[in-house]
Image (cartoon, rainbow, N blue to C red; front, side):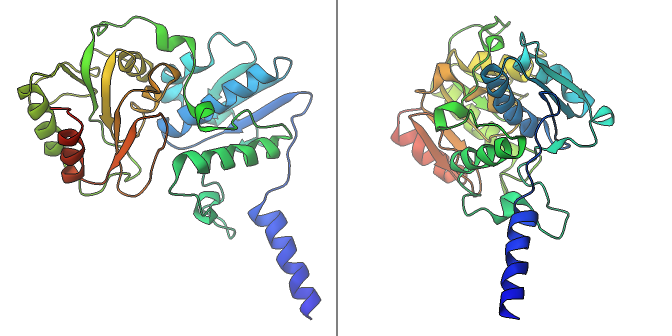
Length: 287
């Protein structure tokens, strides 16, 4: 009886918690992600690096069609990566969501991970597992590999000035920042402006500071603006992710999240609420 229980536990661990490897047929690999823009940005950073590592293989990723225009710059000019609508996804494709399995008996991958609240360490582990499921070696081996690095981040935008602070005041859809109000961003932006700082935001603010949204910039455009900003603050979500790139890894940055940490870059600090943000800004000379 004990052996039977043990055997059942092994089967559960290997086949439920750890899905079987799914190698690409004929060198063609299929993934999909049904969730948010940010989830797909992060995945395509992984997939781009994988495609560069394997130029003779083809990679097709399926996601919501409304994200395609924002995601195309991440795969350009590679010819071995394609983005297709969810409706046209391969039925044998690999679910690339970090919490895949959340609506099954096994539960979500992220939910089982002790690293769930450490974004960088978790994703290094997650991408190693995702690559294993594809039958390939992971291209993500360190925190630096999680930084965005693609040609579109060097394109010029209408906001090519030098900025003291980029405020990513766009809210996320995954409840990353609970208890935070839009007025909190507005208060911080006004205080920075009163201190004489040149501020640019990702969406409209009460102080009417220049914003990437009002000028129709894409998330890649936000990433480009970030390369001309001395300091960056925001809640990680779609528009903020490309600001974590190789060109500003040394920029002072405040990441505002309720629970997680995103330890990317050399001068990143974390805040849980407005009081934490003010303490960091005052202590580090943002005002």
